[in-house]
Each structure stands twice: as structure tokens, then as C-alpha cells.
Length: 143
Image (cartoon, rainbow, N blue to C red; front, side, top):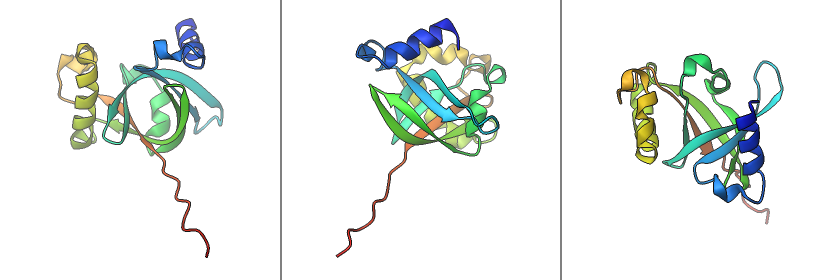
């Protein structure tokens, strides 16, 4: 973990998290192949019933590949851990799915449009990780 990520992670887990937790979160997940637990800070935007994380330069990063087929993770949002299910959405494979997610992210961070491939809003080479809360069904009480 880089020094910047380490500092961000520590701040987000501290009582001072309010300084950054409106835009940044921590994702904690178990790697598919390694079985190791990873924690990394990301920038998120709310969307539909969850959050969306834009993966800048996805060809250089590997963490998002853990979520290609969907994978559980925990997300530290505003000082509280939430159990979520994440799925990586690759624009070239699912343009109709990624389009509204990418739009939600760019509404929150319009200046980040420059990180899209070719600077375009077309999602062809974009990757996002879509995280939705896992709702635990406790069932009906026994009578």
C-alpha cells in the first residue's frame, strides 16, 4: 500500500473520518486466488441503491478483477462498515449497464471525465465496480 493510501485508510478509520468520508471509502475484500484480505481506499459516488467506484486506468490495476463474477466485500462508508455485493462492470461488455453508473459517478465528479479513455463519455473501455448492500433476510418469527 502506498503512503498516500495508507494515510487515507488510517484517516477514514479514525474519529476524523468526516474530513474525507463524503467522497472516499475503504473497501475490504478477500482476494479470489490468494485468499488474503485487502483494504484499499477508493473514491465513490452514490447510485441507485448502492455506490459506484470508477476504476481509473483499469489496465494497470488488478483489484477490480476480483469482482468480475460478483464478490462480497465490506465498505467503510462515513465511519461504518457495510456488507455489500460488488460486481465489476466493463463498458465494452455491458454498455447499457455501465452507462447510468458512469453517469452517476460523473455527476458527482465531472472533472474526472478526463480519465475516461479518449476523454469521451462513451463507456466502451471504462470499468466501474458497482456495490449494492446485502440485505439479510431474517425470515418470519416462529409462532
